[in-house]
Each structure stands twice: as C-alpha cells, then as structure tokens.
Length: 410
Image (cartoon, rainbow, N blue to C red):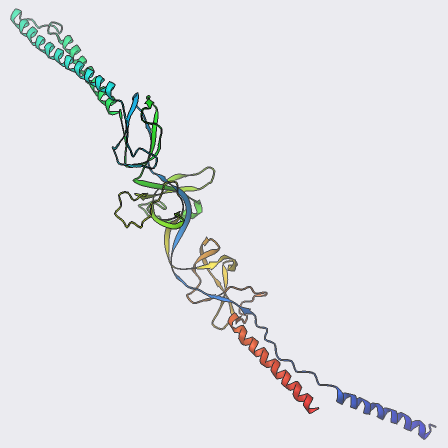
C-alpha cells in the first residue's frame, strides 16, 4: 500500500504547477486589436466631354506655282535692252517688257516684205486689167468662146499666188519683229535670268525662268484609307472643294493660310502608294490683295503641314488608345463601381481614337491601371485617398490610446 507521504507529494506538485500556470497566464498580455484595413482599389478618372467634331486628314507638301515658264529666244540677235525688274525675285506684270533683242535686221526684213507685197499687189491689179481687155477683144473679134489662156486666167492666178506669198512674208517679218521683245506671259516672279546686256542669243537660247504669282498649289499625299473621312457628294469627288488649313513658318513664327482642294491626281503613286490631292491658294504673295498688311505671303518652296477638313460628327469624343480593349473602356459609374462600356470607334487619330457612340457627356473614364479588374467591383477615387489616410491615422491613434490605458491599469 502507498504511504500517506506518497499520496500527498504528487498532489502538492500538481497544485504548484496549476498555481504557476495561473500566475504565468495572468502575466501574459492580451493580443492587440488591429484596425480593419480598407482594400478598395483606388483609381484615377477623367471626365468625358462629348461635342460635335469635324474630322481632319493630316498631310504635308511644298508650295509651288501652278504655272511656270522657261523663256526661250525665238530669233537671233544681241540683247540691247533689259528691264530693271528682270532680276531674280523681281515681280512683273503680264506683257511687261523684260528684254529686247536688236530689232534693226527684223525691221528691215519687214520693210522688204512690205515692198514685195506692194509689188505683188500692183502686178495683180495689172493682170486683172489685162484680163478684162483680153475679154473685150475676144468679143469684138469672134462669137466663139475664149480659152482660159486667152483670157489670161493662168497669169491672174499666178499673180494672186505671189500676193499671198508676199502677205505670208509680211506676217513672218512682223512676227519675228515681235519676237525681239521678250515679255512676261502672265503676272509672275522672276526665278532666274540667263542673259545680260550685250549678250548674243540664238534660236533656242534660254533667257530666263518665271513663276506665275496668281495661284500656288500644294500636292498633298493622303493614304488611301484616309480618303473615307473626306466629304463626298454626288457633285464632287472625294476631297474636292474641301477647305484646307496650311501651317508653316515665316520669320520663325507659325503662320496659317487657308486653301481649298481643287482636284485629285487620280492615280496612286507607285513608290509611296499614296493618293495625291492638290490644294490651291490664290494670290500667295498678296500682290493683288486688299487684305490687312499683317497678312503674310506664302512663299514658293515653303514646306507646310496641311489639315484637310472632312465630314462632321454630331457627337464625338477623343479617348486615349491604350485605354481601349476589344472596343471597350472602363467607366466608374454613379455607385463607384467598375463598368465596361462598348464604344463605336470612328478612326484612330494619333495616340487617341475618335468615339462616336457608347459614351455620354460627364462619364468618368478610368485612366489608371487595375491589377484584376472585374465588372461591377467597388472602386475608390484617387481624390478620396486622403480621406482613407486620415482614417488610418485616427485608427493608429486609437490603438496607441488603448495600449497606454492598459499599461496604466497594470
């Protein structure tokens, strides 16, 4: 049998262990209460503005004269007169004298031709009179019909031919005399002059080069798929008569000019695979314009960017292209939830797309990225982030206060 001592010792040890465990349990701090964390994704938005829009097709080109002419000498001779405006960059009017070739030989040739024509006319009149005399004599001599030769008709035809030849010589001499004067074919600017006073020129010698100042034209390359955005009616071809805004530089400043599409070249370039539209602007140098003196001329050779006006869209907006996924964009609805809107894309315009349908004025377009977007998920605006931070600060302050109260209680 177990002794009394053997029974009491285990009980004492057990009681001591329970007491020690109770002491240690009372010394253990209770777990701190953690504040509830708000895991709502924060997004940035941009407000959509829907308004009427006119589509534009961008292009570029170089301003050139619609008409330009190489002046060529048509007669031989020495240059005896030059106009003071016949210099590179000079402006001349239509039919203005630019240079004169020595006309003396051609004046003499004209006088000689006129003399020959006068002689031929006199001979013709003499032959007509002789023919009439011969006809009267035949009637007095016999009743038989006279022959052509007896009436001197062959001689009359010969003299008539000589008169016509003399007239041709006079016309040729007059034309050659006129050609001694080199005149401007139209209102123009002198691009180059290849002769000087005293120079001898022959038929075919290049005298100068002039550029018509009445109209400038710009060839504008347009991709074939962009032609669909230009206005097309029953009376006009695609793009013809469309207004064009030309943008270039003058004296270091950006300047705009207004032009109009007058024609399409009608072929696709074999190298660039582009179609070409031709824009025209009247009086590019403002020589005949009564407009304000602050207007700036469009100089030939200027490089310009062009914006061709296309058709109008009643309601449209621009959306960054990177936000569009399978013709959908993310919208923050009135309940601060994610919603995907299906949009109708008209065209791509640089880094944006033109949207005609699917978005309303005032819609909140989500412009920030989401890790795991789900339609209908709860979101918070980026401008609400400060409120969340204030809430976290208040929670931390409350936790600190609780901890200090417990410590003071102990």
